[in-house]
Amino acid sequence: MKLTGQHFIAGRRTASATETFQAINPANSETLDVPFAEADATEIDEALIAADEAYDALQTASSATIAGLLEAIADGLESVGEVLLERAHAETALPMGRLTGERGRTCNQTRIFADMARNELWRQPRIDEGDPARVPPKPDVRTMLFGVGPVVVFGASNFPLAISVAGTDTISALAARCPVVVKAHPAHPGTCEIIASVITAAVEESGLPAGTFSMVHGKTNRTGAELVQHDKVAAVAFTGSLQGGRALFDAVNQRKNPVPFYGEMGSLNPVFLLPGALELRSDEIASGLIQSVNLGVGQFCTNPGAVLGVEGVHLDAFLSAVKDAAEDVAPATMLHPGIHAAFEQGQQRIASVEGINRVGSSGQPPIADSHQATCNIYESDVSQIGKQEVSEEVFGPSSIVFKCQSTDQMIEYARSLDGHLTATIHGTDQDLKDNAALVRILQRKVGRIVFNGFPTGIEVCNAMHHGGPYPATTHSYFTSIGHHSIYRFTKPVCFQGFPDSCLPAQLKQVDVPASASGCPTP
Image (cartoon, rainbow, N blue to C red):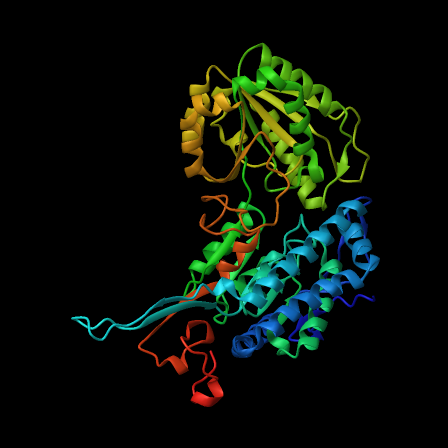
C-alpha cells in the first residue's frame, strides 16, 4: 500500500496545508519516507460537519448494518497483511511478535463490539408502565440509551493498533452509532493511514455516510485544541500523558458548551508486598515484577512504578532477586525519541534525590542512537515516598522499592494516594484478612485491584475496568478497555406518554412497524 501523507475527510483524501512532518524509526533515528500534512482549520471543520450530518443515518441504520461495519473493519485489518505490521514496526520498534498479537487483540475486540451492536443490549431499555387509575395518574415512562453524537478520538503512542485509529475508543463509539473523527498519532502516522484506509473502505461497503469516519494528521498542539473545541463534537477520548490530557481537558471545559472528556493519563500503580507473601515466595515475586516493569519496554500505563514492603530479611531477599533479574534484562528501543528523552529525564530526577539508591539495572549498555532504555530498579526508605521527584509516573522500565517499618506505614501510604489505574497486593489469604483496611482504602483510590499478579496485561472482557480517580483518568466511573467502554459515548433519552406505535422498537409493548404508524424511526 502506497502512503500519501493525506487526511481522510469523509471518504476523501486531502492535504491542503504546506506544513508537514515525518515519522522517525526510533531503532536507528532514520527519518522515514512520506511527509504527513498538518490538518488546518478548514479540514477539521469539514470532518466534523460531515460527522454531524452522518449522525441521523447512523441512528436509523439497522443493527446488522452497524455490526457489519465493525466486522468489515476487523476483516480488513487482517487482510491488509504484513504491510500494516511492517510499517508499525518501522515507526515504533515494537517487535513483530508483539504487533501480531496486538492486531489479534484489535480484531477480537472489534468483533466483540460487532456482537454488541447486533444484539443492542447496551441500550438498556427500561419500562415503567403508566397507571391512569392511580391518584394522581402515573405517566408511562420509558428510557433507553442513544449515541451522543460525533466523537473525537486521540490515538495512543504505545498501542498503535489496539488503542489508536481502530482501537477501543473508535470501535466502541461506532458500536454506539456515533460518527468518529480520529486525530492520528504523529509518531506512527503511516500505521494510522493504513488503518484509516481500511475503515474508510468498510464504511463505503456498509452503505453508511462517508462522514461516519474521518482521520486527520497533526503534530502541533493547535490541531488537538481545534478538534476538541469544535462545536459539533459531543465527546472526546484520549489516552496519553497527564500533561497532554490535562491541556485538552482544560480546552474542552473552556468551550461554550463543555462536553465529556474521557482522558486516561497513566499512574504509578503501586504494589504492596505483605509479609506472608514475601516470606513464602520473594524470588517468584521479584521475577514477576521485573517481567512486568519491562513488558513492552515499560511503556504501559499500568506499569508498576512503586513497590512497598516491610524491612527485614525477606525484603532483603526480594531485593537481591530483583537485582539479579534486572541485570538479565537487555536494553530495548522505546517507541519514539520523545518518550526516550522523557524517560532519561525521569531517571535523572529520581537519581538526584538523596536517599534513593539504584539496586539493579540492565547488565549491558544501550546501543548508541537506538533510543534504548535500560531497566532501573531503585530502593529507598518510605520517608522519601511523598517527594514530587518520586511520586510522578516515569513512562518506561523503572520502579522504586520503598522500605516500610510496618504494614501500618503501607496503609498510611495508601491513604495518601491520589487516583491510580491499579494497585497490586501480594499476600496470603491470612495477609488479606489481617490487612482488610488496605483493600478498603484501595477501593477508593484505584480502578482495579490485582491480587498475587501484576497489573500489566489487560483482559478485554465484560468485567474489566480500566480507569481510576483523577489524575489516572478524568472520570473514574468509566473504562477505556472492555465491553463497558461503550457507555462513554451514550446518553439516556426518556419517552413519556408516547403511544406504543411511536416508541423505539426496544421500548414497545407491541412491535408496530414505524411505516405503518407514521411515526419517525428513532
